Length: 227
Image (cartoon, rainbow, N blue to C red; front, side, top):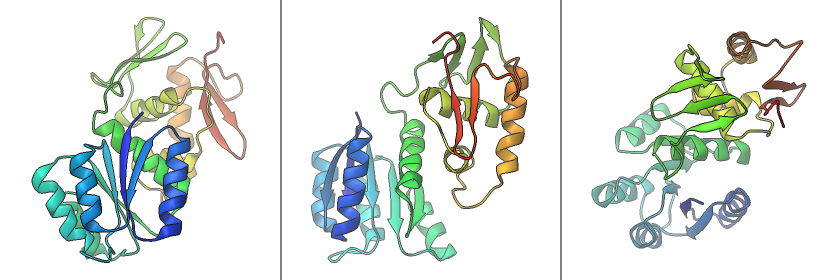
């Protein structure tokens, strides 16, 4: 279970985000002001900070600099400010990701998972095994029935996302958000092509799936064929 500090002054957004992430198994502490948030970020030593820029007592960009002065905790900025120069400036100031309001909870959850994996949350980089398929995120090596798989970086990332959520349907939009970091852009065709390549390397096809099961109109899931 990861610890998340949410710094957001909008009561409804704060409640919705906290409730949704709590249901995903995260422990969420929230604050409505920058100073309360800074205190939480220092006191609780969270695994991740979600930071709004439009705070009542101090601009979130200044708070980001204050957090960076004392901690390297991953920070996802969630804000209504979507101008390119603001995004670039905020990422350059130390934010790990940037999500513009309004956003869907599923997009936020995908960003949280991706940033936590990149941040090396304890246990997140250990080998993942589904059936005879094994993935090691630390070494970025994959094998099937003990035989190495020659995967491209994107193929490995897709398979890792699906393996860490084994048995769960993952939408193409979520894959875009986690692998390509493009929740709004990108093409379903891009995902379809990479999935086709993956199926070929796993010795299966869309017509005769083994590990990769398509749920039409929803997404794709990785399953243990022996289960």
